Image 1 (cartoon, helix red, strand yellow):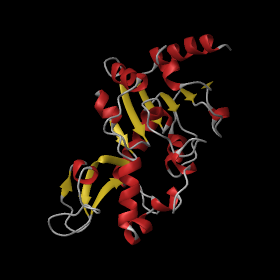
Image 2 (cartoon, helix red, strand yellow; image 1 turned 135 degrees about the horizontal axis):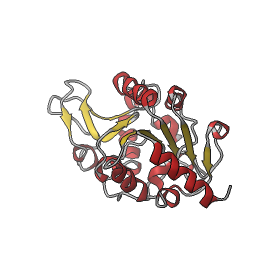
Image 3 (cartoon, one colour; image 1 turned 90 degrees about the horizontal axis):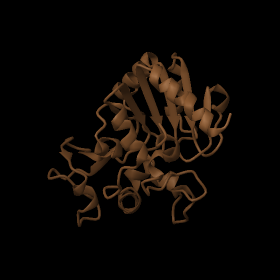
Image 4 (cartoon, helix red, strand yellow; image 1 turned 45 degrees about the horizontal axis):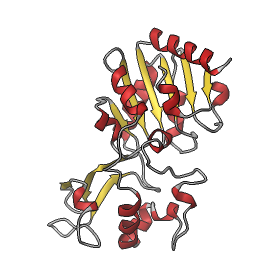
Length: 240
């Protein structure tokens, strides 16, 4: 099929669907100017004193908090990023359909666009807690503070509520994501290579009618999808 023919099929899937799950990865946000991790231009390709994968681990955070926050403040501050075509389209869909967004991103752009049912598998830069007393803080306390390490009034270190390597996903978020997957009749997988475990395993719970996969590169799940687009995500979503 040509791309236009596949778009028409996608539109039919959308019209028939009552409950939609949009499962998105870093490729959803790259069109807002946010770097991904694993592509040839991604954060993991950058050279430094420590590999980014090591910096973004729980053990590194505990042993080297100063270096962690240096990296985090420089690389993870997406507050000025704007919503793109995909974020806006998903918000529009909410007017007609039951739409759940399951995202691996931590930038909060889906909420900024106005989407209401957003499950953040890996947490959010906008949620931060003291590791000692659990007091919550806005992200400005982390990104804008003059301290080398942001600390609570009790003296504890303020940790961004993002899932680091060696940390488990939030059980309640995962349970709800599984429930939404099982209830959906259309699954859209977008902007993800499906290589991040355990997040990628969630799609195995989908029992609905159709799977649409949109990613610029091939993925291990291409053969399982009813429709596959190897194209820019915003380009496809803008035609829906």
